[in-house]
Length: 151
Image (cartoon, rainbow, N blue to C red):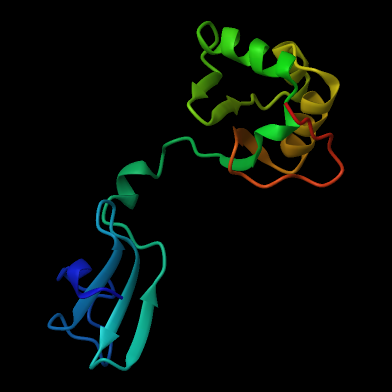
């Protein structure tokens, strides 16, 4: 842990035995206060995983899982289709490194995206695995058993 990232905050553990508010917290992500590591006396490490002071505000918010897969699973035709659709459909967003595709609960709507068979099959597989968004990104990993296109 880098001393430059030191951030003293209130203890999210509510002062359980052995932890006081005078302990120093080091934060990996000071923007949303997640994934804290407590370094005590330079030796003992305790971790408060996924503690966030804003969590209660979003209890009623919709949430879903996203997986990142390589954009090499897209054909040039898929990229063209997604580029055009990104400007017209709210479920598709283009980025400099790929695309985000949000999927409805109904899996049959995936066929409406107009993608080639390989990308459509990958989206269906992601949907069956419980994901409701897929990020196609040039730096994301390849997924076994799905076509790869070198373009």
